[in-house]
Length: 256
Image (cartoon, rainbow, N blue to C red; front, side, top):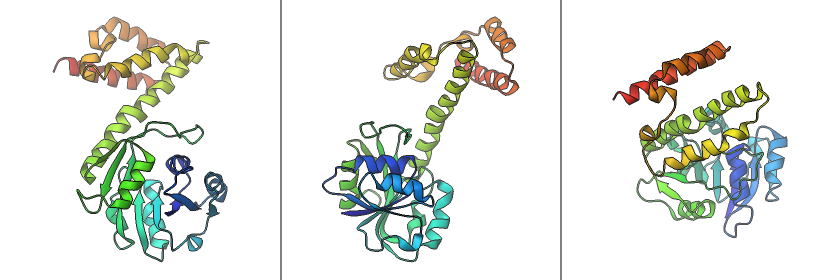
């Protein structure tokens, strides 16, 4: 099946890498507002690249829309034809935005942090899938998901939104904490690699116990002396406020 890929970001690049050697699906056109980015993604499969909506293939078997959440409305308003099958990759936008643009549509939301600077072909990427026909995935959608990942779960729109929110807390917010930790260490001529065994074990424990039971540290112990010393050592007001807010939350959880 010939695929037109709409987008050239992290998720689009991962899909292009995963489908690079597929016998069933072939990306033939890549659209992006940035032609240089489109060319890079298109090169993975020898596809044609374009930055003009009017030049998008109107006869593709399948369209994958991998755009930023704020870009769907504008893009779809400029699309002047009906897509045979169309699937978006958003974690939050309703697939109903595709109503009238395709008769067979849904969502393939990859539950993973993806960065196109890395080789993503072998990363484990669970898929949260939503079909316009709830509880009945089309053969096209089922085949595409099996090409992308061995892990696929059909979810509702509400479940997808809650998964995305949970992922923001678990992944995006925790990575922001790693950024702070990295700065604290680098300011003292130390490397973040020192913390990697700690971080790996923190995640590994989640397979054995709930995160509330796995919580350790000065806030979990109620050790205010240590917390005060930490606060005194932090010169950035926002980071001090964040330290206090998160510590208060941890202490409140221990008292529940």
